[in-house]
Image 1 (spheres, rainbow, N blue to C red):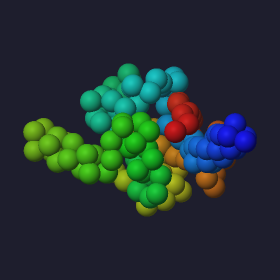
Image 2: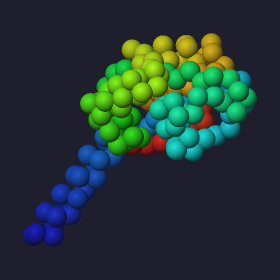
Image 3: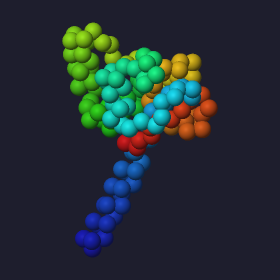
Image 4: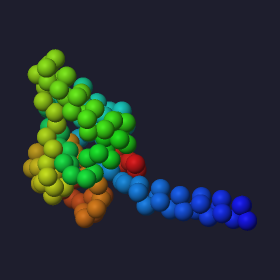
Length: 144
């Protein structure tokens, strides 16, 4: 009986874990020549440790400002919103750099990236078919 309860608990835990997993797409303008990138490079772009593409163009970062933002912080940077704000407060004081622009909707991110060859952003595949969107190029895909 204990084995059955344990197995049932494991099955339910797995279902909850899978249901809460989110897929995030790191995207650029389709004419951006940047190839697929590694997660570490994506982190450094978002933290503005890397400020220019290999072509020399300055990178403009767009992040979602909704319910997916805490998931991105936890999954990508292992930090919460408080630590994010603390990091950028320190960076702003130390270097004058401002944090990446956070936009209210994923559609706003798509619009900005589709108009800006230097842009970089993160999207979740909730409403949009990101991988087949001709206005974007996926350079990294992760599940958190």
